[in-house]
Structures are given as structure tokens and as C-alpha cells.
Image 1: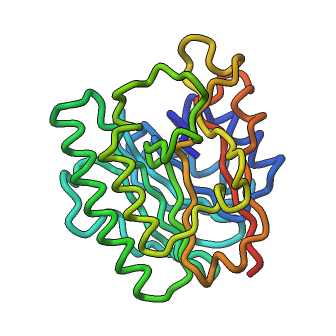
Image 2: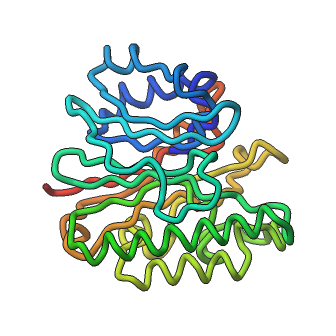
Length: 252
């Protein structure tokens, strides 16, 4: 889940953890430096954590209930600009978890969009190496890509936004073409649930949402997919992030 500042949204996170009791959690956009991550209250709830913070922006974390994430990477191979904390990878209970926060890319055109595409290429290359390895992998996070027009509210006003650009969608499709299963799409083939509602223009109360948070599985693990969904109610909490938690249930 994109937490959009873990310290200011911490109460909503705790309420969701207490209700949902997830085994593993991927968080993006921590917006806090490494030494200010709120580890102690999470440990009191039974969660151990691995994280890579960054002051003001970005930041990613993996939480595991009653398990310690064994970190394997804190950046992508060949990642452009490693000063931005956008990827962490850890083994949890025999599954490799890749938690990512792909760049937004706006405005288009410009250096931010160029950076988005360059980061995407590094991620696609690493995803391919994970696929070839045959390891059980979950690639979860805020991809900042609306894959198709079915993944955004009708008659939207996003136009040439980086989330919908043909280049962004083509990169996501090339990623899926490696053999990854889009878990939410697999379980909701007709109407996929939104994961993000902007704070602007009453888009939450009007249910004008987008699907930009994705969980991808390799073929063997996709066979163990029981269910997938989005906990929409979290978006309606006071002080909530503009994203709601997307989740999967696996038979392991």
C-alpha cells in the first residue's frame, strides 16, 4: 500500500493491520528518513520490518507478522539515481517479496517522465531475472501505471498524464508478457477494483478511482492464488492515504 507518509498516516495503518491481520505488507512512499521509521509500535503488534527510508520523499518497507524479512536487495541492478528509495526485496517465509514505488513521471514530456521510463526498464530487466530463477516471487507496489482504460473511471480528465501514457502502458505490458499474472485482474476480470482516489475534486466520494497498485505473480505461484481484492474502507478513514490496500491470499 502507498502509505503517503507513514508517520502522518500511522493511525490508519494500525487500524488496518489490526483488522486485516496480513502476514506480509509492502508499503511505499514512507516519506521519512531511515532513523525515524516507527518500528517499536509495529513490533508490539507482532510485525518485524525491513525498510529503506528517504527524507521528505519516497521510501519503501516490508512488514512481516511473526517473521523477520531477510533483505536481499535495497535497489534494482542498474537503477538510475540510487539516491531515491524505490525498491526493497526480502525473503519472507520462503517467498521473495519485491516492494516497489515506480516513479510518477509527471509532467510529460520532461526529465521526470524520462526517469520513469528508465527506472521501468531496470525493473523489467530485474523482473525477468526473477522469472528465470523459478523462485516464488511477489512483485507488489505502486506501479504508477493505469494498464488500460478499464482501470480508470469513465470519462476521466487525466488526458496525457504519465500514468496513462502509451509508453507507460507498453512497458507494463512487456512486464506482464514475461509471464507474470496480474492478481487483481485475474480475480476480477470484468470489473477490476480501484486502488487510488485523488484528494482533488471529490474523487473519493464520487468513486472516481484508478488502479495503479498491482501484485504480480509468476506462473507457479499464480496457481496458488486463492483471492485478491482491495480494502476500500481504509481510504475512507480520517487522515487516510489516497491509496487503499490491495491484497492477495495465497495457498502456501
